[in-house]
Image 1: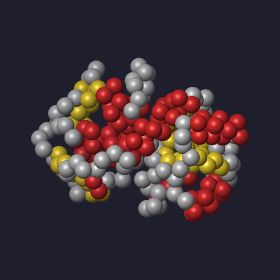
Image 2: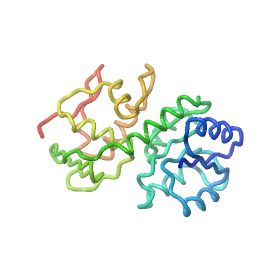
Image 3: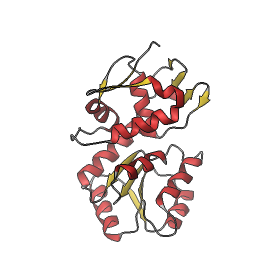
Image 4: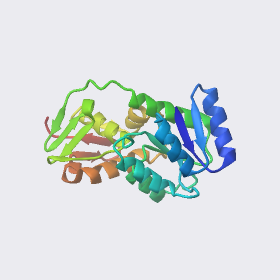
Length: 224
């Protein structure tokens, strides 16, 4: 089940029609109060969240979701007309897993939803990774930096797992988008760079383990 929180009726109808046609079950809500009530009855697999809403701002809703144990790992895609790099950074800092600007195509929306759900259902049989003072345990969704627990969004976690899974390997932006997001590089996408930036910030001193290879991409160096 996918939840859509969007106050524009035209966008709700557009998304509902397209996603139902792709085989998804979807419930849409025009007001946050209706969404919160539904959340008490059924937990969705993924939330499509607008930012500019009546009653309650979308970022406040996202912060609440990330602060609650039962929804902290709920995959969330922001759907918004705010498309500047600053807006995207704020969205990712608040815990968004992906960010789609309006107007959007149904093909892109469907592809990103499938990619995010695929990662959520991915096998969790990888080993524990230890790099310096950074510990990553994929099966338990645990990240520790210098002994302290680190709370990451779903996409930040998948990105970190990719980097630590192959120490010393340089992953291009194209590699990362394809492996983590399931989409192809369009030549202008800043999604990877924004996620790397927020990931480094959250990891504090351990963020220095993520190295930028100029003109190519990113890697985690050092020894396991």
